[in-house]
Length: 481
Image (tube, rainbow, N blue to C red; front, side, top):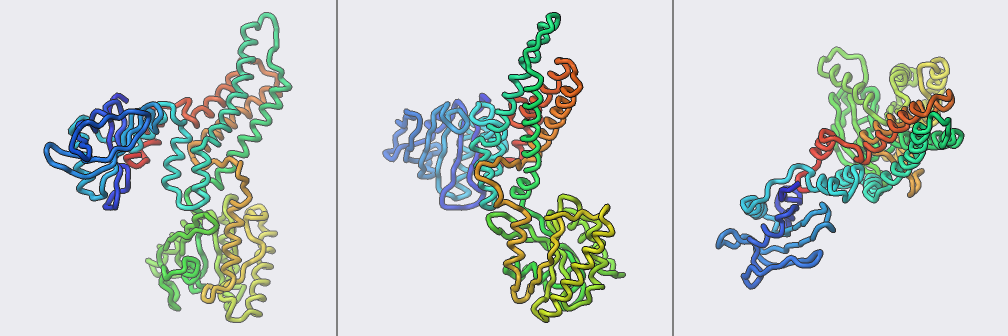
């Protein structure tokens, strides 16, 4: 923390402008030693809380580049330290030369995420806000951008702080009782505590439940396109992407490996994976591809089961039933009746037969197949990947399954697996508190469970942290941020 760090903060490669950033106690001194004003003097003075300075960077007697230097005086900076940003021309050579000059003058190369790590250590943001910086940089759509901005502004942190403070007030009263144990005094109203714990458990449960949606928005929603050979899976992928990504052929088994690409619908990124057609085969390569199909189905959040409206419904049901046995409760399945343009009446009859067959199968295997509301779409979608028929309805169905539009602007959504884990542990500790209150156990045991819940809530925001945790978080940042 006593070092002055430096790094290139803009993306690698050549561009119009690049930014090189310094932070630390010697930032101003280092830049003053290499900066020339337009009149070739070194009389620059970094006065005031912030300012812009036009001039030149020099190395010895050689002029390197014409730059604009921005200075920010601690503690009112991103890192909480004296901070400099040098805006130079975007030549890769110029960037590297200026960075080398700064290091030669006493700075050192910043580690990944070290600027943001210093902001956290200097109290400029908590850990959830620091992690949201990385999420904001990586955001690829309107939805992920909104969630990252909300977290940077402290929405999630405020929620956890409120819960933690409520628990702290009560645990303080319970522990005060322990000091007067011989006098049998009760400072903490147990009825009030039960109500509070129940309310907090409900709120944490809501946050835990939001992780499925939050993680999907942050990472992109994986959608597996599965089905038999020659039902039009690759054509459907190309139609959704609006480009010829996958090879389309009337030859069965053309797709032998998974093909993946992304599109944005309603501000959410969907990652579509076209898979090898499912069929009995002796071809070793095709068999490997079919095995990978089942692997992709297992990883998917949404599964599009594509059938051929020109085929016999009875032939499609066995493999559909096999897939239904494998889906989990956190997966959604949509049945696609493709090639519906060839013979609309036949396609409608095919759809009816397949829907009835699935409904009968689900009824007979209710203990093994999860079907409720959004998990297996009761009504199949008739589409034509070739003409575009029904694709708009399919896109609407995908957005409905993600259910992003149901979020209110004030809703807090968990997007980070570390936060999810901490919340589930806090939830478990509060369940023990709840059981302890029902059993009438003593205050010292109640205090232990409440403090454990507070510990895990504090881990999320960084009030309680270790070097190992911080290292694991910030090593995934880009250098210069």
